[in-house]
Length: 222
Image (cartoon, rainbow, N blue to C red; front, top):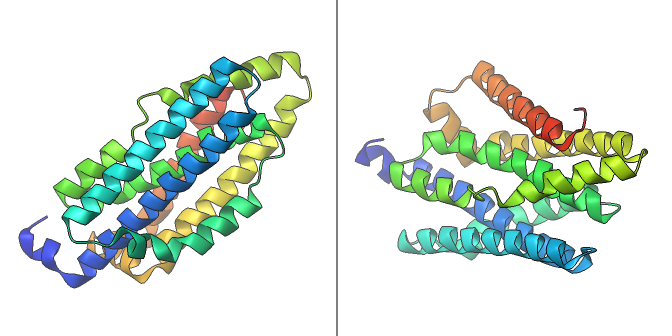
């Protein structure tokens, strides 16, 4: 991406939106995981979830610092997404601790895959900071073990968690679509990157394929 494109006001607005939604997603993930860690049944699981929460907060700070360096007010950038995120989390409130883990692994995974797709259209510096903010260094992998252990001890869990995963997929894709299509600046970023409706469809197919792979790792049908 050349310097002229970076200085374009429409591009700047899209980057503000993208960094704002990603930062607020990281902040809400930190808060949710910190609360969930207190409800974990063992000290080991409390520690694992608290560590994941700590990673989310560090990634949030990375994004906020990047915005500050570019003269972007982080609170203003995150502002448009407070209500949509609240609505999403209200619709996907877990009914138990294991459902919360599945949401952290599957729901957050879909969101991060979407932001990785969007990072293709931004400048190198922004893409680099987004990549760092989207990498949990495998800290969420403990969820796989917990869910698989749950499936061994609770014969009713498989169907229930599979349905939960499908619900999370639908809600997360709707949330991603709202960001990609309903925000004017983000739509302009896609169009400016040469993306047509067919490519948008293929992007959402990739998100679904990645979701199915995550569900399989958990031992659940997608």
